[in-house]
Image (cartoon, rainbow, N blue to C red):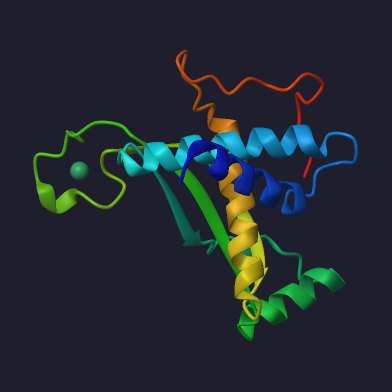
Length: 164
Ligand SMILES: [Zn+2]
C-alpha cells in the first residue's frame, strides 16, 4: 500500500478509536498514524516487534473488597475477560551473551522500549480486542520515539500529550 493510503487509513482508524480529548483528536490521530506506520516498517525489517502476553499479575493487583474489582475478578475467572501486557521491543544484539544456548529464550536479543500492562478486554468481542490492541501499539510506538533524522515524527503543535 502506498504511504499516503496507509497514512489515510491509519489516520481514520485513530480518529475513531484513539479516544483523544476533544480539540486535539486530529493532531493526536495523525501522530498515532505516523508512529504506527513507522513501527510497521521497522517490524518488517525485523528490528522491532510487539509482544502481547497474558498479564498474570493483574488479578493479584485487584482489591477483593472493592465491588468493581470483584466483578472483574469474577469475569477473569469465568473467562469473559482477559488481561494483556503489550510490549514494544527493539532488536538489541545478535549476541545475547549466553554461552549455553539452552539458557536463551524468546527475550534474548531484544530490549523492551515501552510496555503497558493491565489491558483488559472482553473475550466476546474479538474486533474490540483487535482495535484496542492496535491503539495501544500506536501509543507504545509514540512513547518509544521511533523517529529518525531522515524520517521525523514531529510533535504537532499543541499536542505534546495525547490523553487516552
Ligand atoms: Zn540468550
